[in-house]
Image (cartoon, rainbow, N blue to C red; front, top):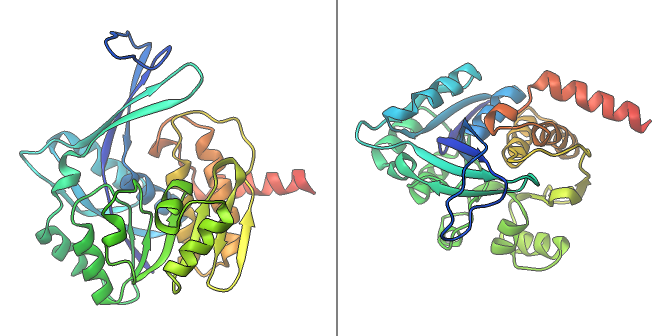
Length: 302
């Protein structure tokens, strides 16, 4: 089964600093690393490394060709990645302090230039029953959701970052919502995880929902039952890509026909590996690495 991920492509400029720069302060960074990133690219790489057949659609500037190569090297199909000659590639300026905390300044760039022409071209190659994965870092979201729904594609949405316009998108055709606590509260109402999940179930009665809870694990509602998956404890390194690894691995397993609990377990294992490594897309583990980690974790628990 094919998955089209219509998403962002960023260059992540990651600065190691003794502390976050303060207003009026000039601070010398202790190091700089450049990583490929963007939630869209990260999730396409997670999908591919998990074993999915994934196609990525999105926009870059001439300075972003390394992102296309990154997708191809990871096994994703990048034929729908369009280079805009007069645009700058989206990028993030990331500070990582001595405690491993991070703060991020994001510039949308070419990600905010996705238009109807590219949307129509990409979707024309997919049919009813194919999958669409979306985040919320590109323009054209309403048009993509509406057109994919009309084609009968199966839609999974990771509504990140949450913005005021998301509740007004055509969300009735979304089959899977992949949300964290911030996104869950925005769409389902504030409260405990149980209250958020109930709010999401009431608002989207036909949808299945994954609610990630950071160190508290994750919940999954499959339309009938709710399942819980704890994290696999590891030493974390920031900035992590576990938030993008999780949906990539979970959706791959769902597409392959695995049960929700099994998909949650493997997603949690892959996310644990990702959070223990530096970088965004470069921290995402392979299917084989994840399998070995999961097997070792189960042996320790037995």
